[in-house]
Each structure stands twice: as C-alpha cells, then as structure tokens.
Length: 133
Image 1 (spheres, rainbow, N blue to C red):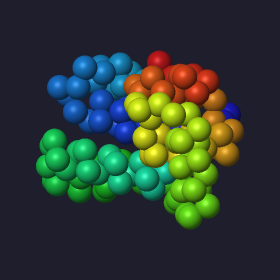
Image 2: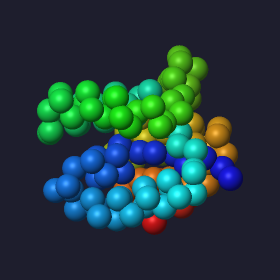
Image 3: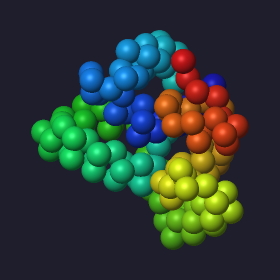
C-alpha cells in the first residue's frame, strides 16, 4: 500500500474541534489507522502547521502535537534542491492560492508514490491526488 501524504489542512481539522472539517477528519484518520497506512509529510509542512496551531490554539497544543502525533509521521526534510524544485513548480503553476509549502508537498508526495492525501486543500485534487474520505 502506498503511503498517504498528510497536509496542514487535515492536521488542523483533526485537532481543532471548531474546524468545519473536524468530524470528517476524525473519520478519515480512524480509517487510516485501521488500514495501518504509512503517513508522510515534509519539514516545510511542519513549520506551517506549528505556526498555524501556535497562533490559533497556543504553544501547549504545539507541544502536545509534537509529543503525541508528530512521531506518527515520516518526515521528508526539505533540502536546497527540493526547495528549488518546489519554487519552480510554484512559479510554473502560477496560481495565487498555491504556496511554496504546497508545491513542495506535491513533489514529496510524487516521490513517495502517494496516491491519496489526507487534505482539505483543493489544490491537491487539482494536482491529481485523491483525498482520503
């Protein structure tokens, strides 16, 4: 089974009860656990998520995530080459809704033969990935 890429949008929805996608995220994550799916993400995504979670929920939530959830993720550490490739993809797509973190995420997912993403960001579907439901 190919790994599943995990995006900030899904992590936030999973952990924050007031998020509109909280219930579907919980259901999707339970399905991933039953399947014993390998979960992959990137160091850029963690930076983005820690900033979002810290700003909106607080640093205690960041510490709790780091201790309890982050170990479940196989993190791909972004180097200069991957950063540059992501920037090229971002500029090539020329969509204002797309970020460098998203572009790097697409590259990481493709390099790890990911078919499914745990994400609520429509840019993943635009890139041809199937969202976990």
